Length: 447
Ligand code: MV4
Image (cartoon, rainbow, N blue to C red; front, side, top):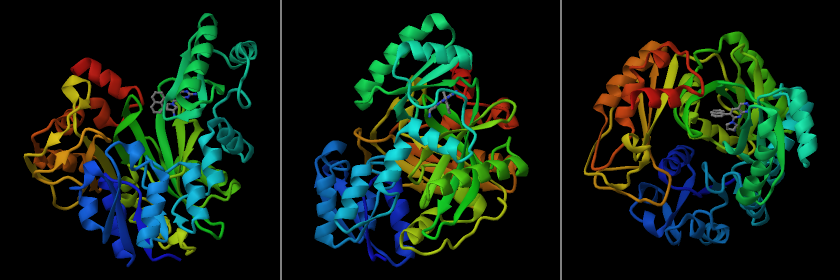
């Protein structure tokens, strides 16, 4: 058990966690960088500690400062949110050694899932479908070439320490293999200090579908259906929804069962996400597992009527899951409102919010840390708000999203609000027939 939670994060997720902590009767401690002294998470937490200068590496990523902040305030648990230290095995380990409950997985679990090749191997061994490819990492060029020929082109070379799209190379034919293999290794070494790569069949135009799971300390693992995250640009998700327009009850059950099988095989505890690629024949394949709460968790919350952060904290306390999954009800869509200029390649648009109005009404949720006159600093993530709508069905949710986006006013900076309204006019989005290539072609045609 614990009584006081330090939130090792900033922005909307810090607020999101503080809200649930308050509802659980837990005391909260915010940490902040010098650039964030006027942030809402600082205002809304019971206590706040400045942990260092502006740059993340000197503050939100500085483990000794965060542990000290917990010790000074008597916080006996740390919630890492997403990003920053959420999937840092050393941080999880140091929390444990400092007698602070890390609200997230063990260091070993984080390390294993962070090693994409090892994670895939574990899933395969537990009976989860994986993308055909090399068994583990491929150290030598010649073996890789042979492997690729066996798999059949196109193939994709992935950095084992990568994930989220970093250090990937698609190879369409054998003549390109040598160059791709070498550059992939060099890039992986430069980016992750680990040049290990593995090879897979390249699945063309897949959908990105992820299953939300939740495990407790008694070995129970539940799944809360899927989220469709196919609307992305450069591996940055912009729109997510639940349920997926292409998943029926039968496929949901099969993907859910596969995810649970994988999670049980590693005794997974807490919230986690199993990412799958789904091909045009609706075959699904394990891609990666994320051992954190995700940005897009609210769409699952809306259709499963569950507070996932609350469940995450309860299971970290050693309690049983309160809200067991039933069938999803209605449809939910999340729109990421970023301080970016879609007219100029989504370049960051930090600065002062001169005027602000949040949409409201039935079925509309806004998770955000911004307020009128707040100055968005240029140093961190550009996410300034998440608009989450719920409707009785997809069409209802889309109509509600249109009116909510029209109500949403942010002046002083550029945002993705109008961009989302344009996507909501696109026939492919409206029909639900889109894949991970949708946004690129949408942007090519219209802008
Ligand atoms: C793939 C793939 C096709 N085939 N693997 C992108 C993020 C990283 N986690 C893995 N990714 C992909 N892996 C095989 N074997 C296509 C992608 C991919 C992608 C996946 C999900 C969402 C958007 C994407 C955009 C480009 C590539």
